[in-house]
Length: 388
Image (cartoon, rainbow, N blue to C red; front, side):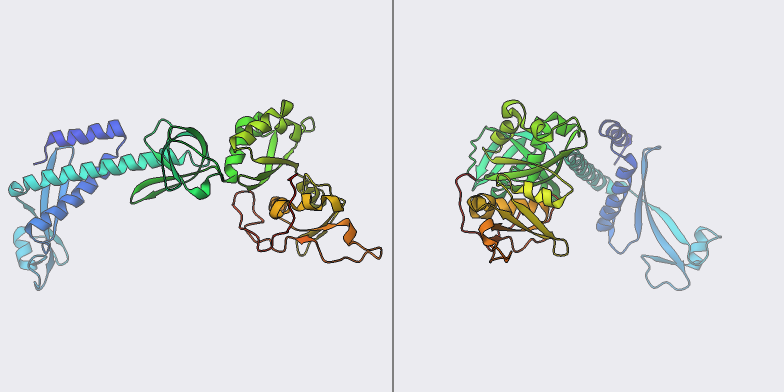
């Protein structure tokens, strides 16, 4: 049967692994009660009580005092109850201690199973708690295996594996087993298969963390990132600003001879990065967001949250970008619908022709805070430009 060595083991577990002994005792009592009922009959009302101070285990059957007994396994008559104790009255519960002689082996096996299961649950819970602190963090990992395009990486100093799905990878980026690779921890969740860690290199959070890593002024908050819009593998637009008059946010992020921004671009496989200085004035912000294109004028419609942008004819394709990429990212960055027109489309009477390109729909995901991937547009402009 369970003896004082067992209870001492619980004391040791509480001290060593920070396990709550009382939780163990309660769980064990429930498990032993279930085991006892299976051994002696489910119909019987019984409970098991453990006493750590005295290192004892007691099994009690119990019955409710009633006028007329209908279930002898669970009920006892008032007359019988008063033979046990004269003060018993209707509704009282009468306890009777049961012999544990034949229950010893079952109890010991059940106790061992409960302890092992609790230890596994605890280790899993502690691992999940420790890993949850890494969510929204940038980690350096090692590629362990590649299976049907999915990359499995090992997190440093752990035995935990991260999963990078094809959609979380930068297009055309290739890795080999053993490569060290930086990833952004997107989500950590617990499932029946264990803890699953989803990592990514295509998420805008990855770019944000790279800026914090490579640019001290971003890390300490002197330069702040307002928003990020990204077409992973092609182009990223980052809106930045500062509240300090003596800091140039663009120059700070570019770095001496472009070293800082080049380092970030290199990490994301040569992806182009447009640094946009954020402005509270939507006209100015929209114009800057269409960089590298030159903008002549911007008009906005507050009620529709849309804008019309006029650009020089020879900069139209640059403003729109290949397959509409530049204007699409600008719309995502600013949260405004953007219609782009060449200067020649405006007549001398200031009548407007049909737009050369219009971002016709900006859904809720498009007007984001820089944290979601985007959906493809239904309408794509037929303009391409090598400059973009």
